[in-house]
Amino acid sequence: MPTFFDTWLPFIYLYGVGGIFFLIGMIIIRKSGAINLNKKKHRYWNKVLIWGFFYFAAIHLFFTLLALYW
Image 1 (cartoon, rainbow, N blue to C red):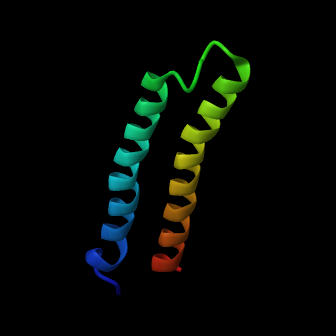
Image 2: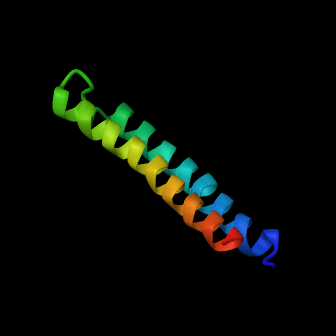
């Protein structure tokens, strides 16, 4: 059986540290005026970015669990 350091630590690092950089990037986008959430297309792409991050984290989590317990 793989250890915590072989399975969950990379997952936590990828989506924890990566999520911090993602959040910083989203804050920079917002503060620089590169996105205007009053525009429909900008709101759409903002949602795509945020939900895409969680979607890939969920897919990764699913396959990690599948690999560990199948």
